[in-house]
Image (cartoon, rainbow, N blue to C red; front, side, top):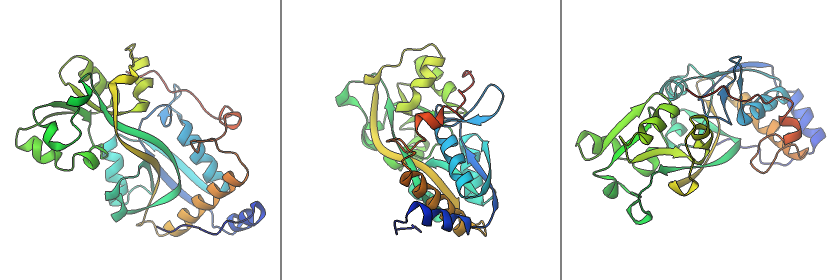
Length: 262
């Protein structure tokens, strides 16, 4: 990973940033309110998206953010059709991409009403369960690396859906006792008029989500340097909150709520 490790002053950072070329890039993301989503007017917004836009502006990059289904977003960064992907810190992406310094924390795991001692924390315990997840999500393989094999052998019943909302609906219908998700699913439960019970979320992995820069882009070193320098400048200026999003006073100027889930 290429990291700008020397801590520069705000003035020095601005000088470094001014020396960067103007680059146009596409940033792929997935629908994940309140951090990345489409608004009622089809604009892309979210806490993470607006923070990344600020990084782009500071680094003199012209960034277009596009929301894709998860599987397509991952495919785009792996085959080089997308320049940047906003997603979790997943080890498999190190083959195609470089992870920038800016990221925000989140947790992933299971949403279930099973008793704590029955939560399948490994592949052996997972056998015999019905599980629903969003198609293309990669974080689950960090916990259950042989999940596809277990499904092929008939040891786990897996239902894959095209969206978080549809996965939640299947889980709530009783068709699956396990829902792979995040602590940020609360937004969806509320939009679907379902009760979010924090005690039903069992975190299995603490991770981060951030910016993956494709090595296939001929400007990837400059793109990475731009994001990292811009992040350092925002930190130097104390314009980021504890989760690395823009401060509320700045966020409210650009953030737009997500459209209602369906």
